[in-house]
Image 1 (cartoon, rainbow over the protein chains, first blue to last red):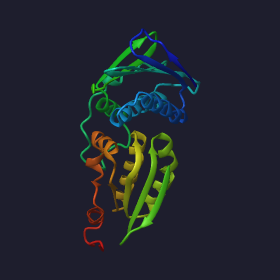
Image 2 (tube, helix red, strand yellow; image 1 turned 180 degrees about the vertical axis):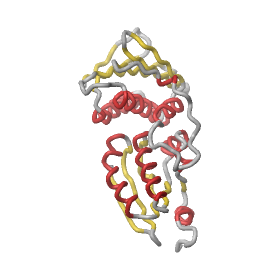
Image 3 (cartoon, rainbow over the protein chains, first blue to last red; image 1 turned 90 degrees about the vertical axis):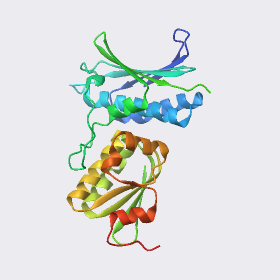
Image 4 (cartoon, chains in turn red, purple; image 1 turned 135 degrees about the vertical axis):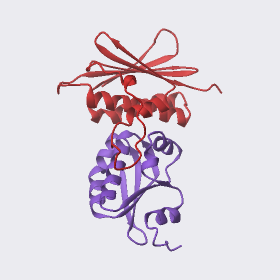
Length: 150
Length: 118
């Protein structure tokens, strides 16, 4: 896992992290996201949303994006601007646009419910914008969190 | 994450979770939950000390609730803090597993025929 500050294009400040596709890495990623939120003194509501969205996006990629057992690197970039935080998650897994998944009706009973499949609805709910792009044979998911000016 | 189990009145088991219910946290408690859901009947999961809940944690709760229901038991959630409650609501979990903030009411929901001692 490597982490480095990046001076983006002058708009806000960015941090970039590269992690292997192992679910056991999620704890360290969350710690890194919490550090980012703490440094910027984000309100708990925003910090929680940020951490949750990154965690759910990575859980999906690590669980479903790869057809082999090889190591693949996933790139996460956080960019903070005064009024928004942009998260970009990039992977070289099979093409998958999570935004094309139909919005499911909530299950009516415990018996009919599935224990999984809640990550994307949570990302949709806690983020203000979600965008997907297939770029250079890689999936790029961009999530934007609007921060109210105080 | 920490898991503390205590017996309440009747056959109710209170499971107090402390920590983060993310992938690592859920993995740590999955086996205990499977065991509890196969042995106990009425389970109150106290979420008041859970600071973070992600979909992997929801998976643990739903699997246990389903297993208990199959055995004519019941699982309810108790006192989640604000952001954890939002995750439960957003994911539709709170329509599948009831959430309570009042202990006597929670116990009554688990065992309606037996009023809890005050």
